Amino acid sequence: MRAHKVTVVALVVLTLGALPSAAQDAKTVEVTPYVALASGAASPVGGVVTFPVRLGLQHVADLKPGMNVSVHIVVARRRHVVQVPLEAVSRDTGSPTVRVLDATGKQVTRPVKLGLANNKNVEIKHGITAGQRVVLAGSQGG
Image 1 (cartoon, rainbow, N blue to C red):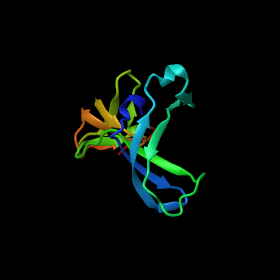
Image 2 (image 1 turned 90 degrees about the vertical axis):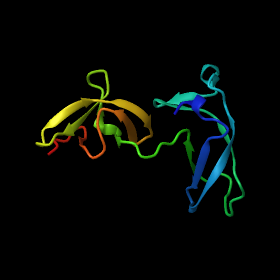
Image 3 (image 1 turned 180 degrees about the vertical axis):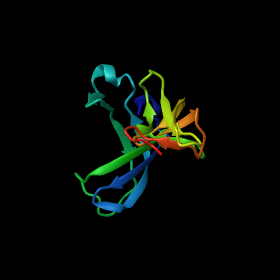
Image 4 (image 1 turned 120 degrees about the vertical axis):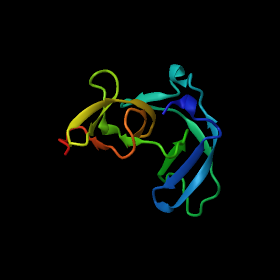
């Protein structure tokens, strides 16, 4: 995720580790500007850039300081799109491709144009259609 895409109007969903049934929407109150990378306020750790975000939260019963909270920030949402698991996308040729099975069961590589992604799936804007059987990296297909 890019810090400059997180805005004060972004949808935020919090899940409390000890209270999973208490998932709750929150409001983004403040986002450290993207220039924070240069100042050191945002820091890359293991290839992931972290940056400070302040959230507003309604009172949640039994929430205590120090409890673990998972935060999911929605910067964009699309419905009714073709999406595949991240591991289905290859960049061996420099451009993204996806292997699919044709009508005879043979693997065919298709160049694709990628759209939105999260930590599990990526949108395919062009190159394959809904219903095609996708071959995941490392599998033989068929």
